[in-house]
Amino acid sequence: MDTVRNTFWVASICLVACFSFFVVLGAIPTDAVALFAVMGLLAVLYAGHMWQQSRTEGPRDPRLVHDRERRGF
Image (cartoon, rainbow, N blue to C red; front, side, top):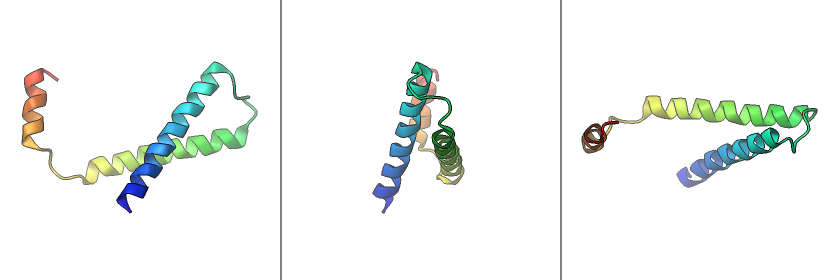
């Protein structure tokens, strides 16, 4: 079930990114209000999902923190 959930989130952010790309190119008319609403909703849901994930995940692996600090990030 976790794989299906992750696949949904990856697919949704890919759809939003592709939609944004084509909007910038001018390939999607701006009068497609329903499509803009759906993509906006997906973007907001994804942002909420990522915020919730960052709040509920466990402590960071000390080895990764050490490696990141050693590289200067």
